[in-house]
Length: 456
Image (tube, one colour):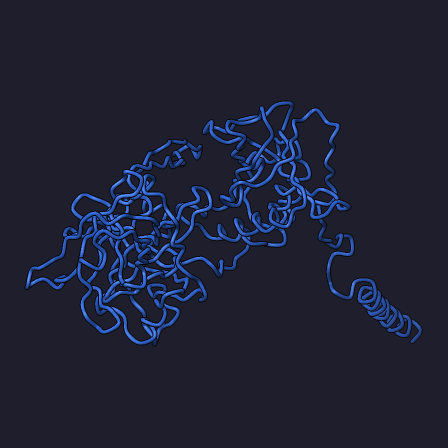
């Protein structure tokens, strides 16, 4: 009897201990997580890094000349640093996605982030990585740290590290740079938080269809490369005439507008036509084609499927409220001007190679809005072919400061709906607003309305 009692008592006691231990575990670690694991706390590593004006690095107070993309900016600098007092800066330790040629996810976000920080800056300082200003592998850009502050009583923040910390760049020799330790910490935190380029989410501003995502600058400067392919690009609609539109977009680096003629035909109707209204910034998706008759390139085969609004082949309205630039242009620049464009090519070993390519100014600005003043009309040619849809259209041969510029009109009508004839402009001095056009081997200005020709 006693042995049986002791055995039962021992079992009950053991069971009670097990329950007690389980209860203790619940109290100590109710989540079931490892109690030894430290809780992750997000940090602002940028604020931990201080600008030391007494270090042996080179430093200069600068202003922005051109915003280029997330990791490249052109700065106005003091004498003795760079040619023409313009330093083309490539940010140390980072590599942001592309946004100036072939567009990559999060590229525009990185570019906008850099631009917004520098625009808000009260002061900007660039710093070298050692005791001299160093060029990058292309030989055309300087490798720098960029510091900015938003007011006189605030501390400078390191923009390179801030871009890393916000998940808007990949590492680029980060660990081996001057601020490598804190740069790696900022990078690791962005990865842990799965920010932007390290996230599983899609960039809401990126086109994820099958087309090549480009800028109009990239298309215009490499147009044969993309012939007969489907391209996607963002641009503002500046003119809608008959079955075609003109579109353009601004490039910060070259400070030029780049344009494209888009043939609509009967491909759009209803809401699709509303999207391509003048003043709208639109995501275009279409095929780039060589137009034999005009000797120029155009985009065609646009689509909008109202029943499938999220189809990636659709054109897409981004925002409204824009206007054409109608850049006032000097006749000599229009006829004789040359523009050198810096082309950066990514080689197989992922290094960059820079080449400079020269273009005619008028070629680069083809299909963009333009205005020109004080043109003296020397002669007027009128199309008289009865079978031509352009019967009554005129070509005005004009001169300004010894430079000849041709202005081509569509058939123009006055307020009484009568065709405007040559004597209206012959011998007059005029201002014109139109679009850069190409015909029969010459660049000209195409005008669509009497309202766009002002007689002095």
